Length: 571
Image 1 (spheres, helix red, strand yellow):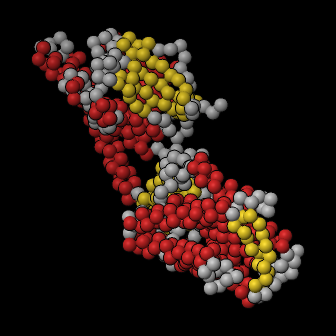
Image 2: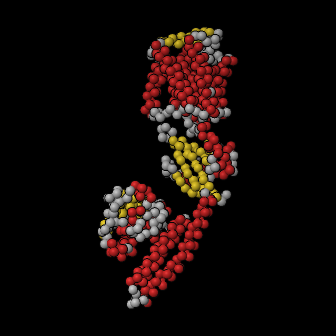
Image 3: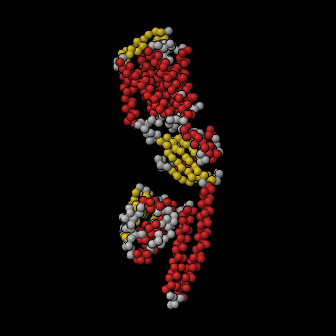
């Protein structure tokens, strides 16, 4: 194996290796950040390069030197390759990076690494190796072949292209972030210049290769960038002020749910400082998020409401997933909006609406009742004008009662948090709703085509019957001179969809967008058809409360198909 000949200079090389391993470790811990993973791998490759060179230089064994040189070249080639990938990702020129381009880029370095590992049998990069004694050191002299100059040109070209990407990125960066990127330029020059002088024979340090020492300086510059200028933080510096001054709490976590960053609003919410929460599990501080964080909806935006019992506040929570250019999940952003006062105001408004509705209901019922008594007592002596007036009073009272019932139902839907849902026999519910509308169906001479069976789903029977009643009455009223209505159902994923198709005049895109809003009625029918504009908004509120969706598909002149969905029973 040979004899070890360590001297004072070896301490410098071992220090360079230690710095490289340290940087690799620190960067790997920060790998959810943009480019941090590739930077860490690059520094690991540098560590292999420096360590192998040191073990080669300070040993006298010929076979050992050749073996260490092979690993030295492996580390060097990997570092050059990973440098360019890291710069492309960090400077946001990585849209073209995917597994295919990464493999294609690796072809050249892999070819040269394989050639060197086949040495001395392969002479494409080095023709041979010799042992020389210089200043008490046994030096492995490499006799260069054409492949060496091709590899060196490729390596310097790759480093140069990386520098160009950094310059292009720096042009569009804020002043603070320019300082971060600017440090990379001198770092690479410190590495390239000594290496070039050593290869050309002009180095004053010969036989020592100063490149590992230069690498130690590069490591120091990177440490400054990481800890002083926050070179590879998850939060982009360009958005630092926005992040800091947001009134809503923002929490950034990695793929393991460890907290990476919180803004001042989140610090007030958690009653913890940044240093007290970083690298800690999110659920330690916000156990209310457990069901949402562990949700299978990992790629979609999650919206929910949570109540923090410790501070007695209600928050709207939004969770967005962070992915890298390969689509791999790197973390999540949690935004918490304090909606305690809004919820309080809505509850007060709903309470007021319920009170007003109940207060109106009694006199309205009295008006309708007295109208019927008056009509009965004057039945024989009614003239046409008086009869028409009584009909108007009765119709108006019923119409106002419908509005009150609608408001009460809306208030109930909004305020009921815990609902006992069951499997619904949808055929029975649908037929019950048609029975309630039998007079209306006969009046409009409507035809309703229903399937033999409908898919069952999960819901709240009383509310779902109201959905059918509202959709059927809507289809009858707007279905044309002789309404023709067709009902169907189908399963899609975890939802059961129900459709009600009519033969009306259809809806414009603008009408389709607004049709489910409260008190919205079609302009073209406002004066022709009685209504209060609550029916479809009630449908929307009910279905969304039950975990479904509601919508309409229509073209002007071709009728409309309204649909709603409810959760399917688990198979």
